Length: 294
Image (cartoon, rainbow, N blue to C red; front, side, top):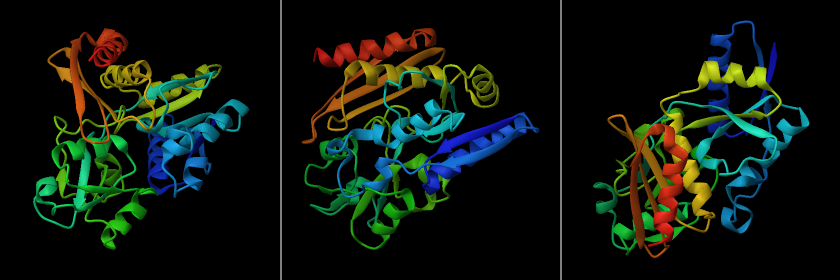
């Protein structure tokens, strides 16, 4: 059986696609996997905030079209980049185990966020990260930082910023975690929905491919957490202009979802909803309703 895997061309996207390729071929040694590298609109336009040009969907639109056209069988995504609503005709075949979910601070100064000088310039492309940093340090200033992970790290190393904030998962996967100055605690810095998780997307009419991906890659324990986070994202109806964070984990056998909605000035509103893993979608919807009512 031959399988074509669609992916973006960044170092991190290629690592993720090759990781999936390896897992699939271990599960099915006779499987022939090839990568189809697609340069998305989000990869081409790097000097404008995503919110101004269509949001995170720009990282998946062309990849989803390749699935729908039959040019690819599956696609590998960072779940935090996948819109809450998939394109018609597509489905998530598998949700992987989670890498470190936290955001990470890379700083030229000791002491993490607290150790940054007054008015320090922090690079980030995320209004969610900016909002939560401003809540702790309203004196900080922020500037747009886009590009792939090594490019962002290089800009920080070159002195363009006092500090930058990236997903710890990407740094870990690329062997760059030694640059992390502080792993930002979940309690104060809720990550993006699905951060640290990979999603395997395919067509609704490709059941054999879906079954193969699920058997090799699906994490049934992690999946309800990601479902709750994405259900919240869909129900809250926010955009890339709205600071939104969500993180679900387990308290014993119960599923706990922590969610936030904020403002760029640093004000945040947070809720916590606990329920059964089987009710993951309803848990996300409940968190969105509670935040909307506050």
